[in-house]
Length: 262
Image (cartoon, rainbow, N blue to C red; front, side, top):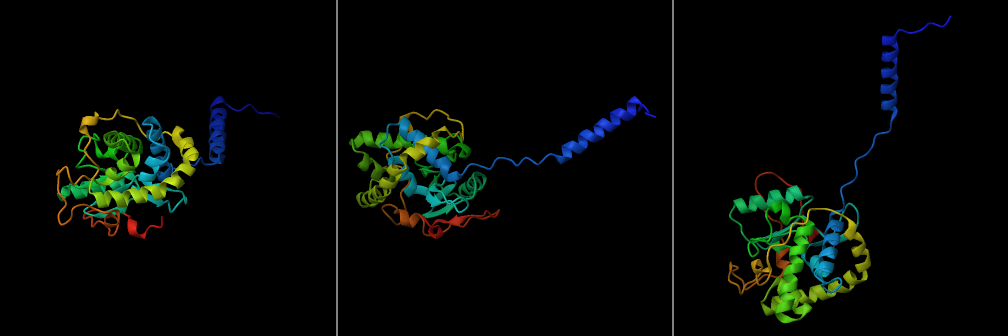
């Protein structure tokens, strides 16, 4: 004989069956974080296009400034969580770690600090970014660097000269830097289409850049006499990347640049 379940019992049975069905659903994995090297490459490609910089030139500068191979994905390119300070450099695993390190350095009185994909100097460009969060944002960092390089080009009407001055006005330092950029440029040009395909990737907000009058003469300008380097007329790239930064306080996992295979 068929028995009719009471309404309360039927409701309870439905709830139980629905819960069991929910438990049987496969877990949905969160989307992986975007590759940091691709974040830089996409941001630089967009900035390069918008500023009408010769194809691959800003990418080549970024490669010289902060290039590395991502140990997790194998992709190569500029690394957004990069810091240079006191003639030493570090790659950090994420933005939070990089920001924490900069705050540690600033707390110790260190002022000459280069950050992000394009290693913009926070002291020489004090109005470039509204915050450290923005300074390490690949889009903001690359767009400021593009405007800066464009101003340097306008002063000499030569992109290669401008590339050297991006690093220094000291002739021997600018010459050595230009050579490194020119060596990296062909590869950057070869993958220009690939980089431009990344432009659709959205990683950050795009705050308007500050007026060009806030730009320094170079990214690390000795002649501007903003803050002279002690014991030297300027800095070479190898000096930046020879040793790790001794950061006190909270320990942060990081990789010395000198140990990273490019």
